[in-house]
Picture (cartoon, rainbow, N blue to C red):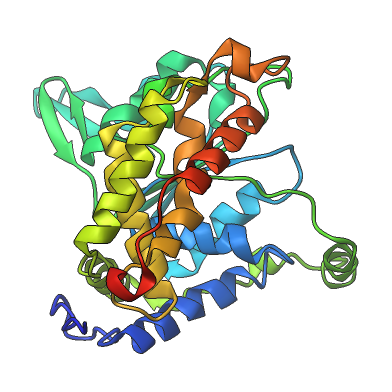
Length: 337
């Protein structure tokens, strides 16, 4: 099936699957000039951006979490807001505050850092849950309510948050409601030896982030997002997705299964993945490949299945999701597109 390109901007370039792939690849190529040897995390971050989702990058300090967020933000010509989360950060520092203007005799709303196309929330779990919750409305509804007035956020809008493991000093657990608003969770991991050697040679005197420039404009990015929304999902693939989600809700080793929001976001992410691969239809493989990054951070295992791990441990949840993927029948590939 071939879908016409949505006519959203006069300068739109992605008029067919291959052109979409070529334009998106320019973004990936630019990001990979900064992130050495990590193509999969870069691709997942771009999938979330094209699917209008939010990204949680979780790993130990120093492996490039913030660098990935900054590189993706710098590769597109959009406004960027960066928030360094600290224990003394207040909700108003994120969303904004109303200040009394004595000359005009009225209050004026001063937007916070969240009023940007791409918001980098650095070390989000170093702030208290009260401050973290300031992002809830923004992430779910693309708006901020202050003093009874609603302020719309710009479009497109994506939050790219980084966080350190919970066993590190000075961190707070993200509430389940907060985690559920992130479309994807990405783990960077350590680079391999070759990538680390390349980093030593290339970054001895310069930081590639200092010279990175945008390769896609905002109108073009909006066009890509709209095009990805129209990627075709067959009824068989929809049924496969729902079967995977429902399996998490009845599995004996999971205390909390995936929400309906997770169902929607899994499909949206699968559409963007298919488009990145040059297709205008989703395959079951697209859904299966995204089950772990989309679902793992939303689920809570029973203490029995977690064993010696914390109940938020990804290892126990990953094993459960692998079992669900193995046990859920996959639609025939000849019928799925």
